Image 1: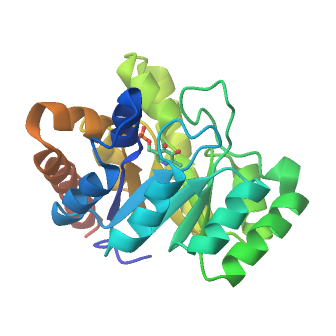
Image 2 (image 1 turned 180 degrees about the vertical axis):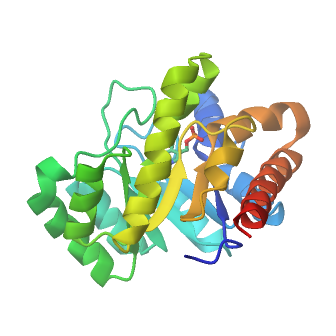
Amino acid sequence: MPDQSKLRLGVNIDHVATIRNARGGDTPDPVRAAKLAEEAGADGITAHLREDRRHILDHDISALMEALTVPLNFEMAATEEMAQIALRHKPHAVCIVPEKREERTTEGGLEVAREENRLAHYIAPLRDAGCRVSIFIAADAKQIEAAARIGADIIELHTGAYCDAHAEGDVTTRDREFQSLREMSAYAHSLGLEVHAGHGLTYDTVAPIAAFPEVMELNIGHFLIGEAIFRGLQPAIAEMRSLMDAARGGARQAAG
Ligand code: PXP
């Protein structure tokens, strides 16, 4: 079993850039948000350079690489353009996500099983360059097995369906999604993959996921940036951190 005390929080700052881009100027600055997040206890910063550049821009990635003292988790689609950018910057980690232009956010996990050969060739140079490669997937044994076969270091489990069902009050779906996440995080760990999770997490949904002993990192963005409007970024992050720590501590006690 991994060291349960080591649950990391990656703060996703994409939506600071969404607000900035709404007016086309320089403020609010996502790098400033990232530095504040570091001070508030973020263990890493996550940024998604989408192909349509709707929030994070190329110069944000350069600025983050320069300014951060915590690792950058660079989310990207598996395209040639993104591979070139990642190889230029060599961030600590790259997380490969599916991307559709018309979607509002990353709606599903990556179809690794269907594209195994291409993805194996795609991630090899990234790993050779020293980036840890993470694959964002649904809690599905077939996708997890494919991620292990292509040589990924990490899988990030998509928590969106669990969070959506919670928000809609659909307890049956929420519990089913939760059970899949629970089983698949243990399964991925048993295959030697490091397990992360994220998407749609809030104060109400984070604790049960944080309690999974195999999960080493949660990546959380939209809710935190929204919450920051009301109480400030650092208190918003600090509360998330303390909910994660309490859930992890509680799970450790229950385990003996
Ligand atoms: N993890 C991945 C792979 C994502 O694509 C996103 C959204 O960009 C997140 C985590 C964070 O999701 P949210 O902004 O809903 O917290």
